[in-house]
Length: 468
Image (tube, rainbow, N blue to C red; front, side, top):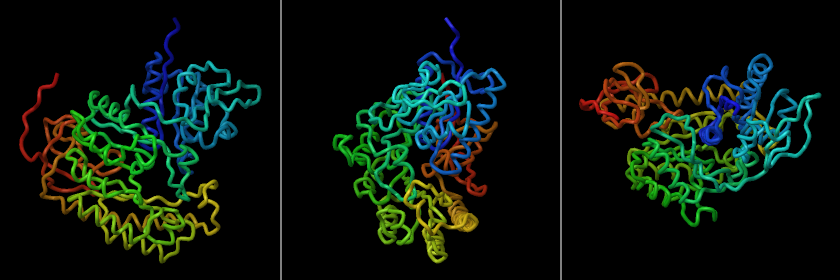
């Protein structure tokens, strides 16, 4: 028998892409491949790309070129490129970069083993079936289907997150058709996992050690509005997941504001394991810009919704993102956005400069904003949010709350997150503690802050726990 192929994996982009990477890694491990974190030891490198924005495409291209160059001079035998960039650019990526051995689209992750083993001679399942030659070189294997029903559960994953938390994808694709967004053209229309699949995956993740599950999808709030979910909406799904034995935290990400119903808000408020946390990308507040973005919500409706969240979910943390420099955004409209952010005081906020994507309706608008103006607006908005965040952190000092321990930094110091801090995107809480380990829940008292992050001490001394 020949030795197993050693495979290194590079995962780029969002949490949804991370789940794709974990699933593909699981398939490779089941096929007998040896997974390595050291690319210098690998026979094959798989790069799971993000293609959402121009900056992400540039990053992916740079990494692919570096990897292909390493193949030319070393033991690396094969470079496989997967994910959103493949689905979006299709074979155009092969025109930009020579030396790629296989392409795997977002609807073909089940073909990653064949892409790694290189057994298809340029004609993979769901491939374009078109010849693409690079000089006299062999035709790359191409696995690129336009659509795949979202019927397979994300089980048997090799998780890239720490053991104690995981991402649970409940849907794929999006039907909202925002004018700036490429997701529908990459991931397709929205389709949902049936609730029994979601529950089965949740139990598997909890049995694998996860105490916190973060629900993700391009638009989680529309879960169940189609026929895929047999009539179960997001509110019902939250209530079912809330009863999963061993689960301690459940967090809702990627909420779309125009479909955030009273039933969902009530479920978040009532379910004791659901974090009182809403990740709700608003993108803007000016009515004309919202309409141009096709966000299906007005400023008045947005303000009413946000107030409802604070009224009905006591202590809720609200996180959002905004886009600065959307085509046609005037100085006055930007000032309106800045004032809104300063007045509302979001617990966390991210700002993106508008990225012109030529295939989108917004990309074809004529009144594009200069890049220098977009950058200045991003900086100005983040400065306002920084002042808000620092003030909210000061208010936390002296309060007591529970944190989930993420890691031990050094003897006597751990880093954790309270319910209003999502992994990888929000601030953290540093705790002076000698005994707690990753996955523990610890009551702490906030004693200070370090810019966005909090500093705390245990609210009571805990004895070490004996672990098998």
